[in-house]
Image 1 (tube, rainbow, N blue to C red):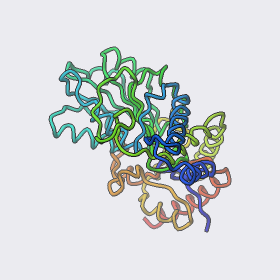
Image 2: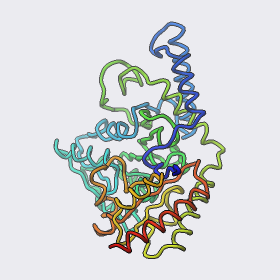
Image 3: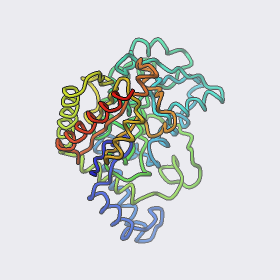
Image 4: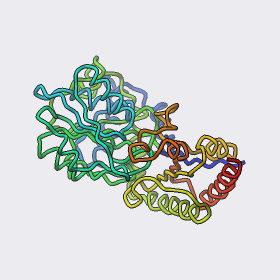
Length: 378
């Protein structure tokens, strides 16, 4: 038995350098950044340095970074914190968003807000003309993923930002899946709000941030209390995880990881298609995350495939980890036109920096045997 992890869109393993940074901070920098004594001020400097590292990477000001517990909290803060602008109450999002956006929008609908859930094309892309047509005189916010966690399709942020600001709307981007994989210069893209999470880039779980453009002044916090994060998110700062997040960001700089992962992913798909028939790759094959491969094995139940892979020590998934229990009929796959049968035959493989060509060969070898066997008994 061998262990091959191909579920990096769900979470990533902690890099050794990040683990060291977290432990060093926990053991030697345990002061509260809000305290005025020496240990507190040492911790405050670490917090400041970490915030500056992350801000520099995204070309924003450190004061525009608000640390949170992760992507779900960041998305909630973006939607609930700016949930009223001059009496307007209409939000535009899409049908393929992460549950932390979809469920938050449903909550806002329950208290009187109006939400438009845009359709997407067969690749998983929002159509700009349809987005613009959905805008009305009550619209104040557009919230869209940069890259989809199930099929990897990347949205055209530039065109969407132009539409948003043409109508003076707030533009929120859920970039949890795209940071570290797709270049993001927030100043050039003219984004107002952006959600990010550390555990998708080999950083710690339980920490993320919401970028809030300085021109947005009014924010209703989710958590009230002390003055931390400029009164935008109360609570004692999770300094070890924030330091680990900054370290993970540092490791992304000048890295060839993306190219290496793309080579492995492409080899995997090409070899699989060469050796197995009646297989479809989902999403935009020309513009998707370099590590993501959503594959429909027509006529085969994905649960049987995943269990068989797991027995062989191979980790993959059927879709979003945050939709566990409902992934057989994924809303994302339904939105791009897949039938319930094909949705239930789809497996997501998401690669990381430790995966190799050898891993890809091994997984394809096992998949060919598994799929062939399942089809022979159906």
